[in-house]
Image 1 (spheres, rainbow, N blue to C red):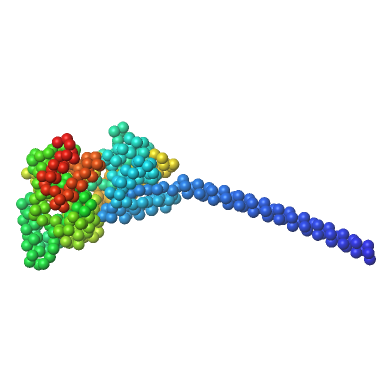
Image 2 (cartoon, rainbow, N blue to C red; image 1 turned 60 degrees about the vertical axis):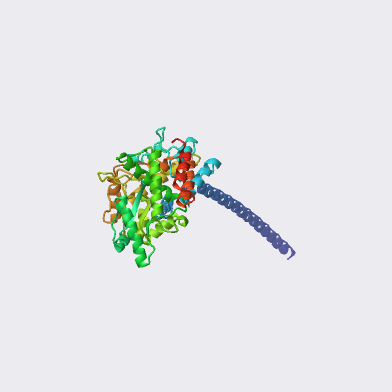
Amino acid sequence: MCENATIMNMKTENILKKTSLIIMVLALCANLIACTYNENEQVSDEIEADAQVKEQFEVWTFYDRNIPGYYYRFMLDDIAEEYGVTLDVKNYSSDDMDNKLSLALVTGELPDIFMTPGGELVEDFIDNGVCAQLDMYLSDVNLYEDYDYTYTDGKHYVIPCMVKNYGVCYYDTKLMKEIGVDIPKTWEEFYELNDKVKKYNEINNTDYSTISFGEKDGYEGMLLYDMLTINAYTEEKGLIPDGNVEMGKEIHEKSVQKVDDLLKAGVFSDDYMETGDEEAITNFINHRSLMLVNQSAILSHLIWNMGDDFKVGVLPGAYSKDGRYALTSLNSGAMPGLCINSGCEDQQLAGEICVEYLKRVNEQNVKLGYASMLYEEKAKDESFLTRRIEMNRLIENAAGNPVAPMIRVKKDLTRGFNTISKDYYGGLIDKDEFMKALVKLHGAW
């Protein structure tokens, strides 16, 4: 029995040893598998992180609230999803964008893709090597000549995505019908309309203004002055200006006098110096003014809010003796559009995204009745919006498209003009003081 017990003990001991060995082997394998899994998971995380870095682009745009930036913004979301990238889009007002881009040029902290109003600012960017060359991405894009933005070296640095913008005058047909007046074509007819508005207010206890106007931001005052300057040129020279026309001192003197006439006639609402551009547009939409002097880019905003209760036209006095007129061009030759940072890590993908954005914006604009930026886009949904077709016809029938005088000058001169014009519109200086300040600002007269 002792021998049998000894044998049993030995067998049991061997089984225990084998079991321990198996457990040790299994534990070792488990550790190896766990380590391998952790390493693979870490590598996978690193690959995913790298992919996210490579496929994420920061984008700056400057669509104001009144510009149809809503569907423009949604297009970027759709493109990001289809291309499998992340587009970190930051939208600013036009003025904020100018300041941010100017600061970024100094600090070098630019996003991968940024929209620029063009002009002097984009030229500084190109000269400083900030903008990547885009010829390879636009080689198969059939742009109309007006949108084929090449720099002095013959190369492309901007991908257009904004239709040309003009200074126009909108007329509230609903309010005009209520008061019983027609759209004025001459300044004499305009001042007669202004008198009728004042009399109507007295009789009906209303507070309608002839022109919805806001000088708080300094923008509308400059736009109105530019349009009046071009009108003065038409009256002085007897012909319609076109392109980059130099406005001499005598033309500006006539423009300053016209502003003075408008101020004395009380054509603006009482609070115009406390009213901003967006507020002035909102006031017009709410039928508080018969006219709005602004830009063609807000057309969609007006249509969506007013339907057919307005018409598109030009300022009184914009017509020459033969009935033709000039439209003030606000971005002609300024090259507004998208630029790609020369420091962007994946310029190829960024370029493809920008070109895709151009095509989609243009397709949407054409559906809404805008003139196309591309030759292949011709179909228009003319049944959609009569106001849009009206705008296109206004642009096509203009005898000249002179570039707004203050748009062409350097940024520091524009800011200087905003300062003195606000003082003038606000009554802090008279027309003679304004003219002296304007001469000093230009220096060349």
